[in-house]
Structures are given as C-alpha cells and as structure tokens.
Image (cartoon, rainbow, N blue to C red; front, side):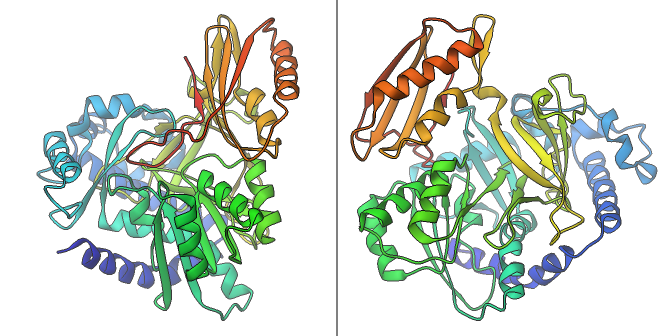
Length: 455
C-alpha cells in the first residue's frame, strides 16, 4: 500500500480507539494500576517467548504472578546496549538490524517511497537530543497508541468545554520520514478535521504564508519552531489565532511560553516523549500541568545507581517500561531526562504529573571536578528578548555561545551574569565567547537544533 493509504488506515483506527482513551482519563488509581499489571505481564510473556534477550533473562520468572513491585529485579538497559544487541530485542519475525538498515538506506536514497516495511512496521531513526544515533521498531498498534496519548487530553478538554468549532490542525515537524514525528503529530484524531503538515526546515516566510492561508485552530510543532512562529506573529509576518498550541521533540523554555502568550493569548503546552517509549506526558491549555501517560508506560525516577529517589536533586534518569509496543519490548529503558514528579491534577486524579524537566543528564558540562548544568547559561539567554535561538558549545575554558538575534542583545550584561553563575559553582575565570549568526544548523533528518553540546 502507499504511505497515504496506510496512514488513512491508522487514523481510522485512532478514531475508533480515541473514545476508550478519553474514558481512561476518568479512571481511578486502582484501575490504572490494574491496567499496568495486566499489560506488563502481557509484555513480559511476549518478550520471553519472542526475543532472545528476554527468553534468557526471564527463563525462571513466574510471569503470571509477577507484580509491579518485582520490576526492580529486572536489569535496566540503555540505547548503547540496545544498539549493540539490536536483534536480540526484536519480537517481530524476520526483522534484523541488517534488514532495517537496508530499508532505511533505500529510503534515504529515494529508491523506495514507502517508509513502512511490509505495510506493518516502521523503522524510526533518531539522534535524540544527545546526538547518539538509535534505531527503533514501531508497529501499527504502537503508532495508533502514541497518537491517542498525544491528542486525547485536548480532545477531552474540548468536549468538556463544549467546543463545537472546527478542528484545523497544523503541524511543523521533521522534514523526512526517517524521524518519528511525521507519523504521529500530523494525524486526524477525529473524523471531521483538516490537516496541514509543514517541515521544520521550511523557510519561516513560506511557513507563515501557508499558515495565514490555512488559519489553524490547533498548532503542534517543535518547540524551536513554535518560538520562531510566535516571534513572526509579533512582528506581523504571521496572523493566526490558534486556540491551542503544543510543543514536542525538545525542551520548551519560559521564553517560548511567554512568546506564545503574548502572540496568541494561549500558553504553549509542553509534552515529553521519545521514540523509544512514545508519548510520556502532556499538558493542554485547559488543564495546566503535564499529565503522565501512566496507562501507556511505567516510569521510575532513579539516581545514577538506579535507586529510586524522591528528591529531584538526586535524580539522574528515568527508567521507562513501554506497555504498548510488543514488537520491540522496552523494559526499564534508560531515558536520561531529569524530571520532577508532581501530584495529580483534579481533572485526572489517577495520573501523576511532571512538574518540570530540568534537562538531560548528558547535557551537564564537566570542568575537571566541577559539574555545571547548562541552564546556568540558557536561563540568561532565554529572557533576552532580542535572542531568538541559541547554541551553547562547551570549551575547555568555558563556552562558545552562538546567537540568532532579532535586534541588538546586551551581550556584555549576559556575559557578566553567566560569569557570576559559574562562579557560584566554583568555576573561576572561565572564558565565555559570543558569536551572532544568521542561523543554526538543524539535523538533516529531524530538523532539530542541538542547543547544548558538551565536550
């Protein structure tokens, strides 16, 4: 089948699944826990029966009586381990890493147009925010579930608020079909809706022209793209009035949120996800707070020794267990985001929240024995209204900071504040250089800008 035909089938399945997903939002904690236990046991059975790695690891495990409290006895694993033993983690018959790379290479060269393998599997390549490449396997069921987790909250809130207007969704995502975002975010999650899909690498004037003509009611895009579009609205290049704006695939800072409020009168809702696990948490304009998709995955916030922590200052990563992708079981997979977990919202009492995402553990800048979080730099840059984009490259002596500007930023003042921040860490006499550039390089496959580059 052709790509458009396959995606039309996916959207049809999503529209059938969505009422159940919306209903889940009214579940009790006991219902969520019962669902987690059931799906986790199903996942373990599949992994034990169909993958080499888990058939060995779970050989003596009584899965029928396995509980969530037993989860800690299973060893964590990370992207490097998965890539080194890729074939051992696959539960889909006939698929090997060699098959995957051959398919992706043909797609890159334009030798094939259909990104789906045998019309039922998708191979998603991602460099992530750290740049380390990974390749992961999605099946059709998993794609449908990710879309439902992404859009069920806004649909629930629009129903709750008696919204009867049109759904005109515009998305700005990865420019190629090698990344996961073009399969998830540009989706018709209800039957009667319009869709405009744009690439994050398209020139902003061109994107503005298309959005002005389309007039979306809902906007989903990379955080960096939302920031650029809000700036374009404030400059008069763009004239749209979305009732909901959401960011994905990268960190959203306060500057982007403030810009969207000023530009459109709505905040940019945040979302947290990754190719390996899918959508992990999301917020909406009508229900503030990033709600954890606990019915789709199990999350453990741990320290560097994989021990559970309550204090975000001790957190080093999240161990995530995917409950919806049975073609490539991801059990206690290391996600190197540092997150702070919060209490449930009144609208969704069975689901916890992510209060904030501090960043990735791999973003920390190490200067000898001194460890500096990049927010010591970025917090200063984000509040400078003349700075539209930035990239912080760690150097041996400090950092080289590239800026895309819409005016004349006070570089001297920013530098002085950054030096004071670094002195608090005990880093004395660092060398901080600034460079104003016309644009920052984007990843050719994902369209993302890499903001923090450690040594």
